[in-house]
Length: 211
Ligand SMILES: [Zn+2]
Image (cartoon, rainbow, N blue to C red; front, top):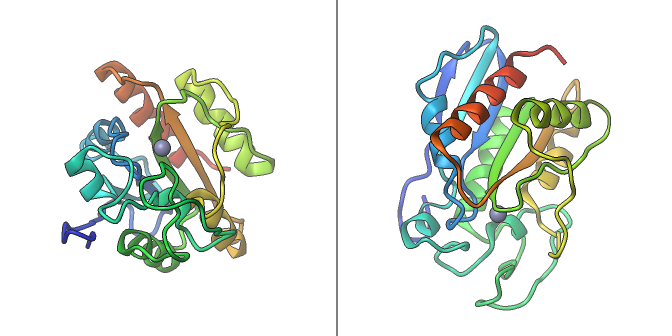
């Protein structure tokens, strides 16, 4: 449940015994293109051997108000309980909240990931149109997604990166065998219907590929 009482729900599709893959369409409420991708993933056939979980938005209040933060003015992608640091104050675009995992939306996703221990977690963002490079198996899966979608592999710069959701998830899932993979896909400013389909199909391809 969000600060304003909106539900945060996950839809489960595919093979319950399969590789667990979690997709989060929105974390920054004014970056909503991922909703189109999650809607397609809800309809397309799931590849064999994939246990797919879809969260359309982990920031439903931000989506409702078309703002980056949650209803407490917290940037949820600076609020996760790994390498958390205080950033700024309410009103700042990266306000990290009063403490690590202070926000109900963060806690909901932390609990979901600790329960599921997925092998692969992806968060969609805008507008940087890129995927950051990674190392090892994580890097190979990122590169494959980039290849399938045409996104350039580049690091995003210009922010303070503490309490970041994907960094927390990688650390949290490092004990999986093999260690879990988590990364951000930065979509462009807009996402056409064709591009949304390309991303949904790419997600299903990497979900279904042995790694
Ligand atoms: Zn973002």
